Image (cartoon, rainbow, N blue to C red; front, side):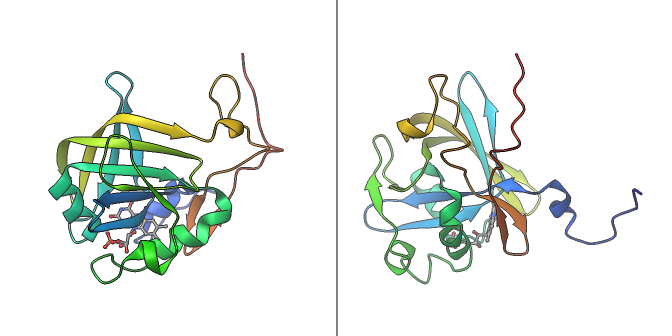
Length: 184
Ligand SMILES: Cc1cc2nc3c(=O)[nH]c(=O)nc-3n(C[C@H](O)[C@H](O)[C@H](O)COP(=O)(O)O)c2cc1C
């Protein structure tokens, strides 16, 4: 039976959410943070949005460099996503603390995460205030993928890998490869 939802965390009704690690900064000073609030926004030009609270260190670095990386990690690395969402890069170097394997982006200065399934390099084209978060609108200027995990149409092969989906309250879930429907 459908009932009125009385809790404050209405957001959990919209979960699970594909959760990524946003990277920002440069080779001197960089950070990495978990983000569940992100989405594709436009096909042409290819735009990607991520909603980040102004108090995050990541927000400061994106404002400074006008660039960010969107790193889609495998489900098996959910603990790293959780860890990057639990402490601020203003206090520690999360790349060192969590032994994140990074590499230099092709078009942006922010480090990217080597164990990702796919990665978007984005250049900020707009910042929209949305309540207590800012929506960074990024143009995708370069993209990476693990070729062996995708089929010839560029679609993820669910039996080979899953990204990490956040359910809330510290729980992550993977894609269920036995529950795939396919339509022509
Ligand atoms: C699973 C998860 C998802 C999160 N999603 C977001 C998000 O979409 N936007 C946001 O501003 N913060 C989000 N956070 C909080 C930040 O990741 C967290 O505050 C982080 O420590 C910020 O790091 P920074 O200060 O280095 O930027 C999330 C945290 C977790 C654990």
